[in-house]
Image (cartoon, rainbow, N blue to C red; front, side):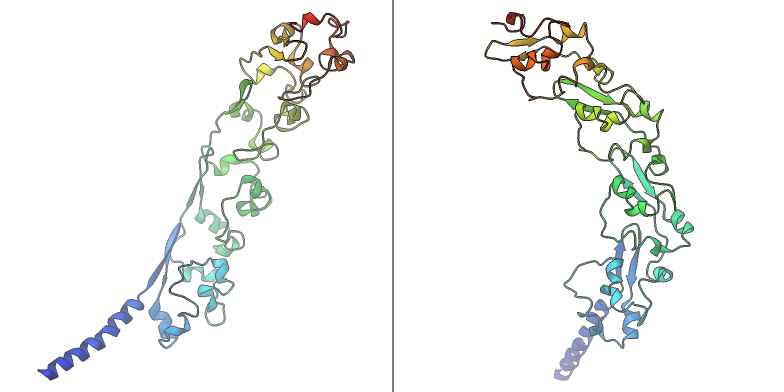
Length: 339
């Protein structure tokens, strides 16, 4: 009986390392987004290194470290790249060796872009033109560490813009429909304090111009871009690039062309001599918005307030109220000041 227990104990002790060994040396699958997983075979590697686990553990692979390395890092001898340098084993930097680890065909990648539809990157189409050279993009252009880049950054050679520059392939600065299939840009409403919102119609403008006429030379492809004042537009910024009175109606002209239904209200200027009221309705019967804005009055709050002495010298209201074009600012105070 004691002999049987001894034999059973010995059998259990022998069996434990074997089961543990089998667990440790199973194949490991590394999931890859938009591609089949990469399978690491313990059997193949242990056979090549006489079952010496310490060659890799923990010298190269620390079992406590969950970091996933990029191909660019592997080319700098990290992870698999410690051995796969082209000396001990085939190089991870060898374009012809990609399919030795990456089995199957790379899938198409879909990028969802807010306000611009979905973009689908076709691997098969690009690989066909690059003689299946994955390294043409990985990891020279796409390193695995790059985040999302803007269209303006692409125009400067980032990611897709490295090839889509108008020389090697169609430029990213225009030709929006080549990538953004079925894109129909919507109207953009600009809400402003004290005036009706201005609505920019893509339909109207794209009927006469291509996307690249404005993007990204004039308008960046991103939300929250700088908002320009009317004075800045009159100097050629933003809409004023084209709306200059030559290429299209001037931004210094009829406000109602952009600010539909706009009816400017009366303005009250508080002074020590009583409130002065400016009536837009009364003045618009004889003048246009452009006669005063922005030559005399800028389109913004908190501008300089001129004194009566300044007005008598032709500043502010005194530009017209000079006794010739209209009653003089130095005349009857009660015409403006409710005293």
